[in-house]
Image (cartoon, rainbow, N blue to C red; front, side):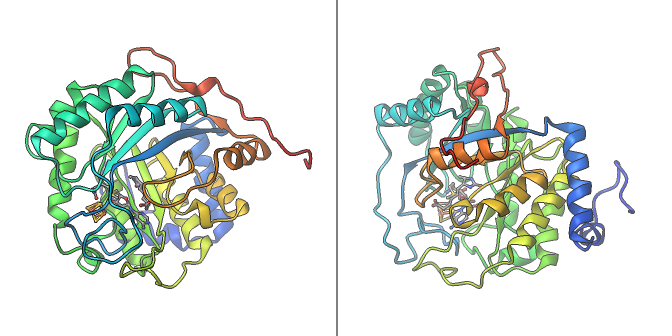
Amino acid sequence: MTHTVSSPWTIRAILDLYELPFMDLLFQAQEVHRRHHRPHEVQLSSLLSIKTGACPEDCAYCPQSSKYETELEQEPLMPLAQVLEAARKAKEQGAQRFCMGAAWRSPTEKQLDQVMEMVSAVKALGLETCVTLGMLKNGQAERLKDAGLDYYNHNLDTSPEFYGQIISTRTYQDRLDTLERVRAAGLNTCCGGIIGMGETRRERAGLLAQLANMRPFPESVPINQLVKVPGTPLGDVEDLDPFEFVRTIAVARILMPTSAVRLSAGREGMDDSTQALCFMAGANSIFYGEQLLTTANPQFVADQNLFARLDLQPAQTALADGHPTAGKTRFVALTEAL
Ligand code: SAM
Ligand code: DTB
Ligand code: SF4
């Protein structure tokens, strides 16, 4: 292993990890995981799309882009009361963080005012807050921080080399600039990407190198498996071997030992055993709730059962102000078949 703490990760060193025998890679990832995290705890984030569809960007994976014909129903910005109802339900079910996503290229100041109101109100329920609103201009991250925002999600999505085949309406550098603004405002960074878009293993390693070489690296790293939506350019891309996805989680865990690595989109199409391997490989966060932004996610009860069968429990977390989140919940299996 050529990597030291002070030197950046090279693509070659990352590929060396990917190329380890599967069991050795999982073992190493689990060892790193146990050194830095409670091994039976998983952080739970719920998602809500607060503004859906009609997005001017052309991200080839996304059902919300106005460039593609999908079956999606467009929705304007959701009223505050409806957002709070969803947040309360998520909290009741045991969610710890509430993430609100808007299909914007970047928010206007007026839109930001409305989102800030939502952030403050969700935070007041005792939930951690996260938003993903697209690119931010100077000063906007600070305003969100002042409203009580804990995390800003902005993904790099893929490697710089593959990026041009996926998005043409904004550059990789645009994304890095927004991430810089998020960091400078003192917000926690949530940044990851999508696996299974037809990229090569080298390109997967390229994404992980970008993430792992950030200083500091993101506190939260969502690894999404592409949800193939008919009508998008990636609607019928070839399936990825599930073990390659597990390897990606394991490598992310080794490269970013202290981050939360989130097993993100794609769980609805994943069997329980593959999810268990992802947890073994060091995933310690999920999207929890029956809907991602516009596509399906496992039912609450299905995840509660899975956790009980795997002896996993929601992470113990506390907000910065000491307000406890739902970490006390312990899920109990609803089946007798154990
Ligand atoms: N419009 C904002 C932006 O793109 O920055 C925020 C919302 S956008 C839907 C958030 C992220 O969702 C994208 O960066 C992408 O990583 C993920 N995503 C979108 N469609 C997806 C799909 N079909 N499968 C997996 N992940 C997807
Ligand atoms: C992230 O990395 N994945 C989430 C969240 N951040 C915003 C979004 C997944 C979207 C999957 C497709 C959909 O439901 O529209
Ligand atoms: Fe728009 Fe975000 Fe979808 Fe891209 S990923 S089309 S920016 S909603």
